[in-house]
Image (cartoon, rainbow, N blue to C red; front, side, top):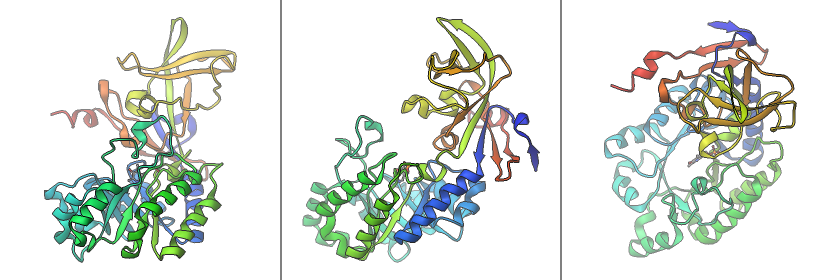
Length: 384
Ligand SMILES: *Cc1c(COP(=O)(O)O)cnc(C)c1O
């Protein structure tokens, strides 16, 4: 095992703060306990499996977006629950998925019809519904309730299919909705009212209700008491087991991306060329888009020295944002971007032949432990 101090960290590297991770997990466990619900890690946000044994001591298990995540969850949290949702499943993967997953959520009645008999008695099948009630503005790419969404069954289709075949819900044990993104519990409360109004008549036929992810539970201003009230009300009114499957909330603010300044160039402003890339190592910066916070940095003009932070790929738009610092930055200096555990490692790529960031754990005592470094082979292996 390789240990180092902060100045020896390779760059770029994702540094995962285990103390913050445990703080988040403790918060989520309190919700599980006080609300009497089950909380699963949505692996698509954070799949750093060396932390799964730790996560599994706090949470009920994992949820997956497909076969490979389901395998990973089973491998590294073998005695916890393993759930899956995918818009559609491939026939050749279904046997393995059923053998791995405690709950399988289907996105349509046609998928349910296709795999119904295979599931029988071996897993707990559920259906994803689409309450068609948006509680977020602007970000259509992150809104499963946006018009024309493929995610979940709208009530009109739900009712139409059941009229045609009243036995269609036979064997279905749960309903699932996922409509939120980085939201507070008021958005959940509002959504629940719509879900109950539209789908409540079927609650007596099922065992569980999965309220998806997007709950920013570990954020400072999150109203946890309201969340607990919502869950308890559903449990007590309908006798249902309740599941939540946050991704972000598990590792929120629990990681940084450390990068080195390689050069300073000038064109209208001063531009720092970094060895980390938005396109390769923090794609949400370009996709969302947003400007990540950096340690010791302010908004442009706020501090004495303002720079544009950009990467050493060929992509003109591979710009992280404009920042200001108290002192002049020079090649060799390091910059540390905050909140880089989630939707970063899971999305990274080697575009331009960029090196993948190393993975490091910052232990609760403050020591840094190198988990993995990447090299040329990791770039090459996917290309021929
Ligand atoms: C993305 C996703 C989650 C996790 O969402 P977060 O915003 O990371 O909490 C949970 N369930 C489903 C079905 C998802 O698609």
